[in-house]
Amino acid sequence: MQGYIINLNRVKDEDLIVTILTQNSIKTVYRFYGARHSTIHLGYKIDFEAIPSLKSTIPQLRSIMHLGMSWNNHRERMLIWQPFMRLFYTHLKDVGTVDSFYFDLLEMCSSIWHKQNPKRIAIEAYIKLLAYEGRLHDDFICFNCEEEILEDLTLIRAFLPAHKTCAWNQTFELLHVKQLFEEQSTIALDDEQIDVLWKILLEGF
Image (cartoon, rainbow, N blue to C red; front, top):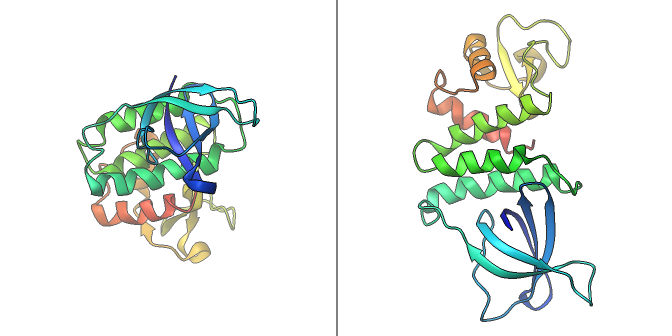
């Protein structure tokens, strides 16, 4: 079975509770600490076995193989990838079965993470996620006053659109955000705007 590690919790004696997003489920497994174990980190894609345990309701994580990407040793890219993974954990942690969309989305992201600004990849992926879940507010009605936004557009958590006077965040060109929402592309946004959107994204899915 293959999946992405979206959360690690350290417990007694360096043991770990590991949460893994697979193609159709969220797996919570227990990894005993020991010299023979492979090193695992948040965000790694692994091949593994979840073995039922007689001592616990949580299966044991066994036969781990790291399915490494070329950029896994690139510190700057991993420092963006790992918080992106945590967002999937907080978003999906209370469900057991998931559609393959989420795994496939991470597959797409990981395949191009080394090719361009990873913050752009993450933002574009998030737009795809919002659209898939029916939460993309592309009608540009302010979440606060419920009036149409014609200028001074800003975005808050979950990329909800608002008037600047209703949210007091940085403003964006309406046409640029429309292009982002409609084409799922950040091409019209400069790197400073990408940094602002990344900070909003980190507030949670």
